[in-house]
Image (tube, rainbow, N blue to C red; front, side, top):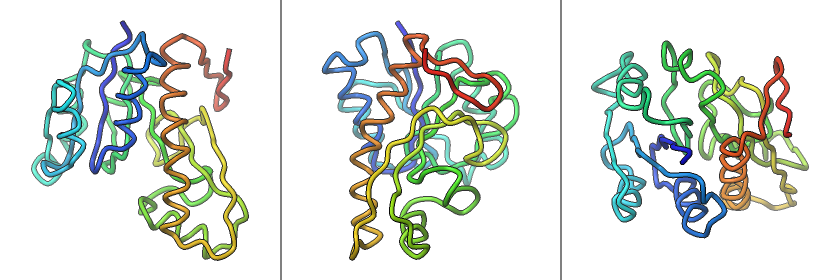
Length: 203
C-alpha cells in the first residue's frame, strides 16, 4: 500500500478529492495515514475524522520555525508521499531533504505566474483577473526549498471569461484542482513519475 500524509490549513475540499478517489477505486493502492493541520479550527480535520483518518494539529503560531521538524517527527519512515492540499505554511529544512521529490503541492495558478510569497487563496485569482490573462488554472508541483518553485507535475487550464470575478475564477479552478491532485497522486503511487533536473517525465 502506498501511504500518504495530507497537510491542510482550511476547508479540505482538495483532501476530500483524495478521500473520494480512494473510495471509488481510482487510488485503490493508496491510504491516507495522517491528516496534519497547522490550524486547529480547519474543517479539513473534521473530514478526516469522518473517514477514520488519524489527525494531528501542529499550530503554526506555537511551533513557528520548528513546524517542519515536527511534521518530520510524525511522518518519517511512515509515509511514501506528503501532499499539501490547501496548506499555507512554508516547509523547509530536513523535511525537504528527507522527502526530496516526495512532497507535492497544488497551487491555483499556472506556475510560474501568480505564485510565490504572499500569493495564496483569493489573492491569486484577483491578480490573474487584474492582469487580464485569458487562461488560468492550477499546478501540481514538487516542493523544494523555494516557494512554488519545484518541478511541475500536472497543470490544468480554464478560460478566464469576460465578467469573471475572482470568486468565479476560484470556483472554476477548484473543480480542476479536484481532478489534478488525485491524478498526480495516482501517477506517483504507480511509479510513473520521473524527475530529470527541472523536468517531470510521465512514464
